[in-house]
Length: 91
Image 1 (tube, one colour):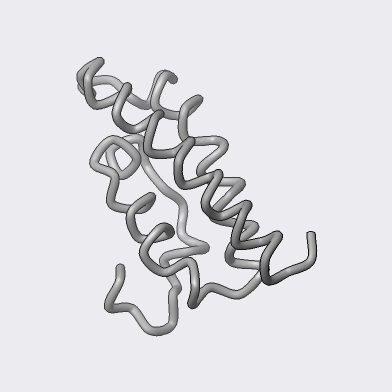
Image 2 (spheres, rainbow, N blue to C red):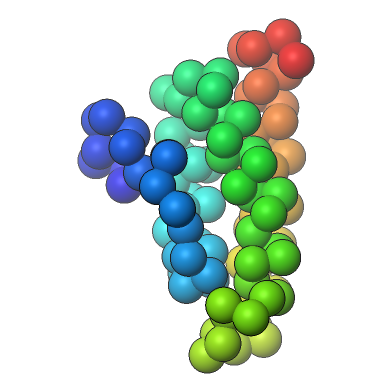
């Protein structure tokens, strides 16, 4: 994801497994300075929704520890993206 210059992954749907592994959240975190204001908003919305996905029906097979780590990472990424939005996008 970090190597994708077009950032097409931002608009692709995410699975519970991708939240549990942290791949998408780390990608948003690592690319936040390169994302547009719209992409930052998409990432923040996704980070805010990740805990519900991780605790939902689609998360079967994910361990409680993975859920816990995913929820904590999503909260951290949401805060960081919100700070970036405030800094650059005037929101």
